[in-house]
Length: 110
Image (cartoon, rainbow, N blue to C red; front, side):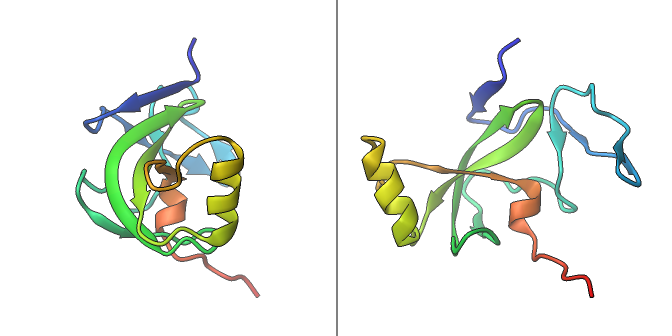
């Protein structure tokens, strides 16, 4: 089974269902881990991960059965630009990969 696929349209998916720390629908092929539904292609999104600020959804991907969004990043962090160039890719045309949780503010526990 291929562990990575890209899509131009939102594929059928299920939301991840948890019982404590146990994932109840682990066998489902495309699981979304966000509280809100996946944003449509063309939507502007705020990103809550590693100094990414935001961008525009350009597609979707699935990796190891988890659904994520492909995002054209508006202002990529300098570290990401350096890493992308080091891989021989162009940061201006390379999309970021983000999962549902990356589109939501983090909850800090005390």
